[in-house]
Length: 197
Ligand SMILES: [Zn+2]
Image (cartoon, rainbow, N blue to C red; front, top):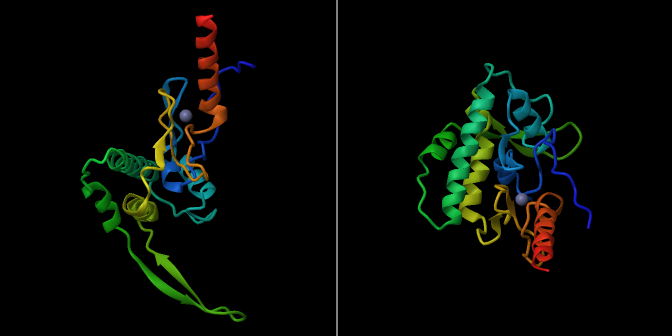
């Protein structure tokens, strides 16, 4: 088996959770045992929002510098805490998430193109960064309510903090990814066996 060098910090956060809310948690990762926040600037958050299709490119409003980053990090940690508690079957305090949800203001709007059928779209107020991020808060609340927490798991590698939603048929997913942790585990097992010989 080839023993690969430890991975350097990738440019972009991992997208491997099979769930856009859990992928948000994964923008904070442990890389070689060192916590690494992929979100260092407003632009990092903006790129991630577009990449995960929370928003369309070019549709991010101008907020005061640093506010999008702050709000996104804050929401991320609020969600992380509640996901952890839900996973451990512990009661959670929803106040912090509710304060994001309370800021969500939206209304349905009928759009009727000249040629084609009418469609119902949801218009959201996006005056503040919190308001702008409220669809994620809403998705997180839904995940906490309706998610199957036997399938929502953290990667089994002891140094890894990445979450995923196991949507595999057999429901036996153990690793954030084979390339990141599955192989690390294999290499460690291989070494252990070698030492025993
Ligand atoms: Zn992992």
